[in-house]
Length: 249
Image (cartoon, rainbow, N blue to C red; front, side, top):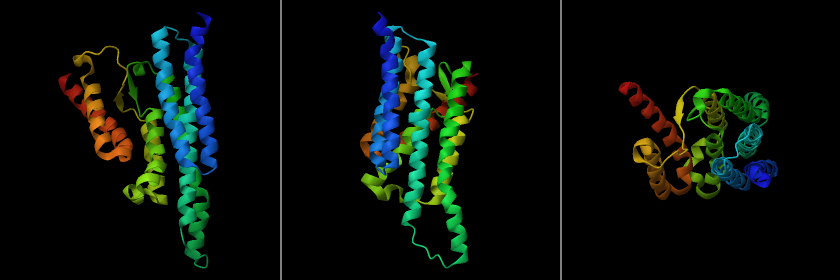
C-alpha cells in the first residue's frame, strides 16, 4: 500500500528528469533530442495524473511536485529552445559590420535571444493560477503549459525534417512574435476544454471526440506539421465551443 502511493510521484520525477536532460541537450545544440525528451515528458505528465486517479492516491505533495516538474520541463525547456533558435537565426545572418545601422541591429540582436525566457516566467504564472483557480478543475483558463511546450518544441522537429514548411518563422521577428503571443495565451482568461475523460459517453465528451478525430486526420495528412496545427485546432475549437455555449445560455 505504501509503495502504491509513490508510483504517480515517481512518474512525475521521471518527467522532471526528462526536462533536466532536455535542457542539457538544448544547450548542447541538439534541439531535436530536446524536443523528443519533452514529448516523452508530456506522456509521463499524462500518466502521473491517470495513475493517481486509477490508484486513488491523490495528495497535495503530488500536486505541488507536478507543478514544479512542469515549470522545468514545459517552461524552462521551451525558453531555452527559443533562445537557441534565436542564436541559430543570428549566427546564420550574413551582415556587414561596417554599416552603422547594422552595428545597432547587432547590439539589439545580442540581447534579443533572452526574450525566449519570458516563456518560463509566464509558464510559472500559469501554473500558479491553475493551482489556485477553482474554475480550472474541469477545464482550463489559458493555454496549458504542456500544449505550449509541444507547440514550441515542434519547431526544431519541423526544421530538421521539413524545413521549408516553416522557413517564414525562422527570423527574429517570427520568433519574437511567437514568444510574446504564446506567453499571452498562457495567462489569458480564454476558457479551453480539458481532455480528461470522466466517462466515455458521447453526450458528455462529443467535443473531445471531435477534437481527437480531427487531430488524427490532421496527423495522417500533415505528419510533423500536424503538431502545431493540432494545438491551433484545440484553441479554435475551444473558442467556438465558448461562443455556442454562451448562445445556449
